[in-house]
Image (cartoon, rainbow, N blue to C red):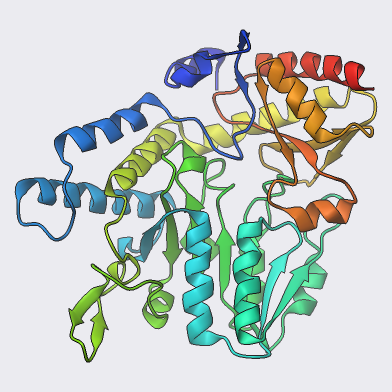
Length: 407
C-alpha cells in the first residue's frame, strides 16, 4: 500500500490523532485489541438510534429490521471466512467464550475418562484453561506439542502425540507472542487421518491473513470482533454443521428452544441452538461493518504491508545491543516480542508509554510459553495496517533512549 493510502486509512481512526503526555500516540498494541474506524462506531450509533429492538421475537417493524441486520451480519461473517453455510456461524462474546462453548459441549458429548486433548506450548490461556477444566471434570489428560528454537511447532512430536485416545486437537492459527503462523491445514490433515477433529483459534489470524475454513477443513474456528477493528464483547464460532448438530447446547434459555414444557424441552436448530438469550445484535452489525471495511482494503494487501512493517521493525530492533527477539519462524505475522539485555520488560513499557508509545508487556496470557524461555515476560510490539515505518523509526529512537536510561 502507498503512503497516501495509509494516510487515507489513518484518517478513518480518530484515536490515532490523540496526544499521550503531549506526544503523538503510536499504537503498537494491536494484538491485544485494534482501534475502530469511524464507520464501525457510526454503525453502532445508527443501529441504536434507528433500528433498536429485540430480535427474532417481535412482529413489529423495528424488531424485523434489527433481526434482518443481525442475520445479514451472520452472512457477512460466514462469507469472510468462506464458511459453506451461514448456519455454521454462532455468535459468541468472543474467542474465549467460543472455545469454552466447544470444550463444554463437545466434551459433554464425546469425551470420557482417559481421553486426551492436544494443544501446543504457544497457546493463549483461553486455549489452555477450558481444556484443563474439561480434563479435570472428566479425568482426561492434556497433551502439549513442543516448539523448536525458532518458535515453530515440532510436527514430528505432534504426530507422535496422536493416538486412539485423542478426542480433539486445539491449536492457534497465529501465536499472539511469537507471531508464528502455524501450518493449520497440515495439522488438520494429519489429525483427520485418524478421524480426530480440530479447533483452530483464529483470534490473531483473521485480522492479518486470508482465512478459508473449508479449504483448511477446520472442524471449529473461533475469533473475536475487537481484534479485527470491530466492537468488544462479540465474536464468532464456526463449526461444521455435523458437529454443531451432534453436540448439546452450551446454555439454556430463550431463543435456543423449540418447545418448553415442565416435562421436557426440545432445542432449536443451529445456529440458534447455541445462542441463548438476547444476543449483542448491535455488536454483530458493527462486527460485519468492520469486516466489510477490511475487505475493502483487501486482506492480501494488508498481509503484504504488515509483513513489510514487521521485517522493517525487526531489522531496526537488531540495531540495539543486547536485543533478543522471541519468535523467528519462517512464516510469521505482525508481532514482535523482545527483551533487551536483562532489563525488565515492565520498565521498558512504562518509559515508552511516557513517550507516547503503546506496547504490551508481560506474559501476554501465554505463561507456559514465557516460562519455557525462563524469562519474566517480554515487550511486545504488534502492528496493523494503519501503522507506518515513520512510527517504527520514532519507536526505535525512543527504545534506544529508554535502554540507555535503564542500562
